[in-house]
Image (cartoon, rainbow, N blue to C red; front, side):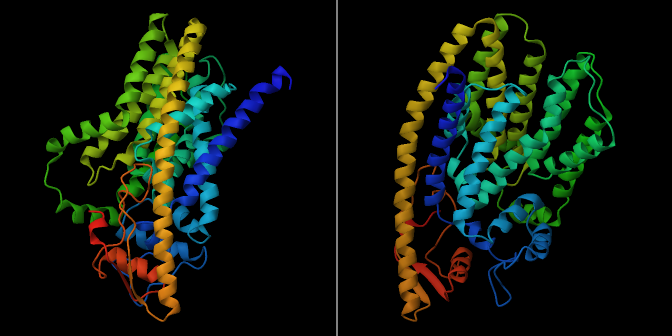
Length: 456
């Protein structure tokens, strides 16, 4: 093999290995919680005589409209989710793994647009994603969670491409313009603003900060950049004014015991748990790079990603729920910021920067391998126990018994296991989840004989 082809071979090896490892976990992750509900034309409440499975893409229009009016405004995510509910889960497993690879590649691209990254840098990014995406099982492996968080992360990073290119372009360079460019960026903004409430806010803030950085350097801000932000604002507004959002907020308001001010300590705790390590790494790398000389444009760009990412997480203090998985955008933006600062460090002290990257990779590989063994063991155990549940169901149906009692899988605690902290079977056959589970598998009712394993 020639020296020029060695990096390409190493890069291919990284992507093949990551694909195989993540696909294996996807394959063993079973449906849970909302997955069963979204296989049906959406409706409020438990299943009834009118409930029917999605049969074609045409069913999505009425289903998403009902969802928008009764649940929330994330039309883009839930349309994608319900579309893939039309196919066997094996299709989702492959597509979801490819989306994970694409997110990693885009994180690398945002670090240095137009530059070919080293295989080591890409390996470090995938290691960072594996270890720091909060509740990886819920955000990446769980079907409903993955489409809402991982897939929308991909959309966020793709639709921000024009702004990252604008931020990296020399101020004297002519910026593309015209009707086609403007229309394209407005469309991208609308899509980027339609992903998720806090990711859309992060999109708008980051785009504005990147534009501000260019303006501060004396660069002209093209009209399409402003209009793209307006498009994102429209997408976010469509989400926020969803009647379903209001109904859900009113429903959850009765369960909230703390005011916004009282919830601040908790959101700060979540911030530390989900992104404290990465924020600390960024500060160290940024200061080391800054000590070698002014960072200029890259320094502002890195800071912009950090600000937008952290704000997107902290903003959840005003939302009805504050799940850890929603910090995925904070993690992605921090990884990008660390990469930008590290790249600047490598310009002035390549030897030290390379040594730091090598040390980081060793830590990521060692820590990541341990976590993978634990995750794979937990997920495979749960997968085998769910398979036993399904065997009992099929045997009962074959015997003409549609009121089934199963032994629920042992409640896992590994954060990479999507079934660890998501809703599942309860002892009460009339519980909402039990009724949707029963409907999906063609049963009259289902309950468990080991209620001590029910997730609370």
